Image (cartoon, rainbow, N blue to C red):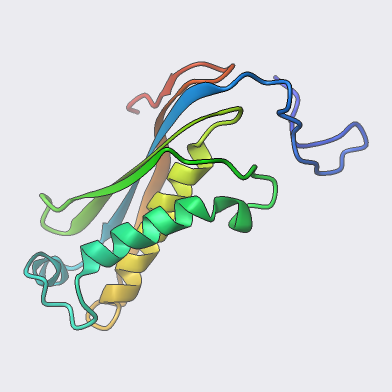
Length: 159
């Protein structure tokens, strides 16, 4: 098992020093899901939720959240993001699937930025739709893949 990089020899939390790492192209993809009543999804698809365009607001919230990741996760580095995208799949009858992608050229990865984007997009969908469906469930937020950096590529295996 590898040592935890965010812990010093005394067991205290610390920020990892990335100053000696080389800049590499990095990309991470995170997924998430919001389960809801079929009638709620119909309202979202028809853009009939009273608060407004659910997907447009959730997309902007996810992108903004990715850019604010170090403000939310204490040991994350501030990085320059080259691109962040948040997309939705509404092909099911009772859920919205979220795919968040973050890209950067730098010394550290963008996994947390992609995960934060997917999480906040899911939370925003909940907020936009809670007046009609308080029983929605946010689930399955996970890292789908990542490329770049010292640890190389990762792709989640289906269970």
